[in-house]
Length: 444
Image (cartoon, rainbow, N blue to C red; front, top):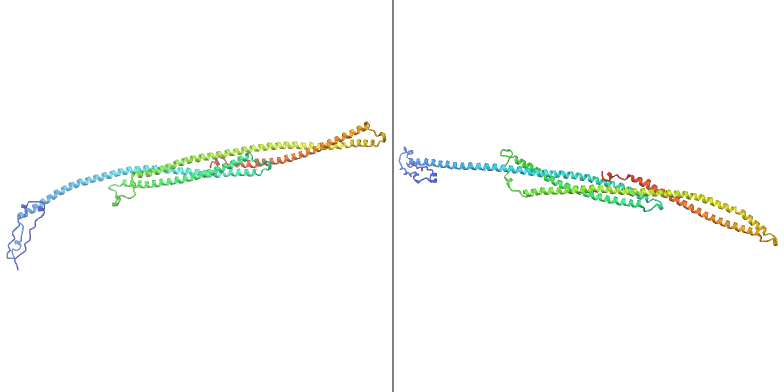
């Protein structure tokens, strides 16, 4: 068996050299032990460090540990200052963000209140416009009654009898009334269309404000929840991607301008609604007044026409009574003339008989004596009287015929006036009592 044993290399801390300790502190390289024979001293003859190396080794460890402690203390002081500074900075940043969130909440609340106020105003304006739309529709429906009355009056008056079928002031006023009603109906329809369009624009503006208000309501709740978060909040989590800038985000200027534009549009619609409401109110007032004024004009024309008809009928009746009296008197006159003519027959017979008998006188007795001349004169006088009486009788009969014609014309005209008066007073004017009132024409 060989007596050679492997010699182990002594252990030295290389950190001493790395830390820059002087070379004199390095252990002296021992001489390799001489091989010895014999197994009894084999463990005691192994290579070992000398005491100087041993002291140098643990002193190096001590120095290295001291340096490490000093470095650790330095790092601890730096770390303490760092985490204190970062803690203070984090708390300050968190406080600033909390303060900014509070200010943002105030801004959102202010704009949200303004949006709510305009939403309520638009809702009230829309309700008022809906009420005006109902009034316009009722007013339009109410114009159908006066239109039916006016057209019925025209149709009734078209059935007047011959001489009374005249284009008088009543017909002119009725035609004006029909034209006015048609104009009012067209105007009410156009105005109703304007009101409907304004209601639609108000609802669109209100919907825009409500969307904006809803977004701000959600944003307010989110920011309010954010403001309540603190370092002790249990419901906070890590969201690394939340700090990445999102696309299509607004800035404070565009955010404010967006709401201002919405409010400006709403304010514009509110002003348009206010103007339209005033226009509709004035329109209903004017149309109602125009219709009632025209109705009064037609009624006055009817009243005047009835007065004229009554007066004409009265005059005709008085004249008919006079004509009837003259007819009776003329008939009696004709009878008297006939009797007078008849009464002249006897004197004529007597005179002619006398002349005939005297014409039978013989010879020289046939003389134109005074009786003969007187008889001839009497006959001529009776002939002239009969001729005059016959002429008078013929004229009396002609006068009676004219009186009869006048009587028939008067009676026909009286019937015509009575028919016209019935049409004007009992049909037309009675029908016009159904004319709508001012409140009905105003849409109430």
